[in-house]
Amino acid sequence: MLRSFAGAFLVIVMSASVSALAADSVLTNGVSLNDGFQLMYNLEFERAHQAFLSWQQRYPNDPMGQVADAAGVLFSEFNRMGILEAQFYEDDKIFKSEKKPSSDPQARTRFNDTLNKGETLAKARLSSNAKDRDALFAMTLISGLRADYAALIDKSNLTSLHYTRAADQWARQLLAVDPNCSDAHVATGFSKYIIGSMAAPMRWILRVGGVSGDKKQGISELQITATTGQYLAPFARILLAIAYVREKDTMKARELLASLRDQYPKNPLFAREIARLQAQ
Image (cartoon, rainbow, N blue to C red; front, side, top):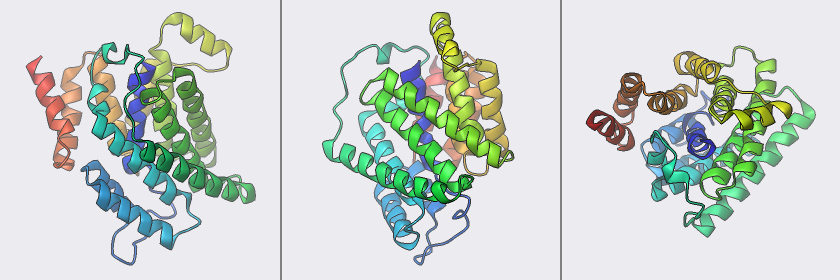
């Protein structure tokens, strides 16, 4: 369960990484950072990469340029290895094997380097202002992306859980600074859902360690972002679709997937999953 749902966290990549400060800014070539994520949703990775590079050049102190580029690397790798499709399966048979997928060493290096640069920039901003909304948002995403890589490429559940908890903690700090930031509920809702989905003994162990989960509460928080999120609404809809598939509510899952298919017509994943659900 941890592996299958951790992979879904990567979709933060596609819309979450637009910082509040930079969201409405436009690059000299007329492409905004948000445009880069829309390109990524449509699997146009090279064009998205160029948009993120342009952003880094214009806003060198904004950690989101680095985070966005790292997210693009990870999403491209997941797409290449067919990992995205696996998130929609109702059981975890595909995750039983401990054999690690064949990742690209250059992609791994680029992913780690860009995240490290983004983390350095974010922490520098937090050192001067612990309530920097955009830096807190960046740290939330950095932890989430690392959780994805650990779970689905390195297949290290403990490492992934460590980063998932960190993402949840950063998101809570973000909500303390901006209670109206509904995007932050993605991280907290995600954490509650996957932990609430674990077997009772594991939930007890995590609760002793200060981590609790509740599937229904997790879904409720994801619904907040899906309906009112400024940047993460598409991501929350994807997570909800996955949750509905696993909860046997295929009608709601198809509705969400249909809206994503219409919004991102160049991404075949949504249409394929709709067809698979209809064939069941």
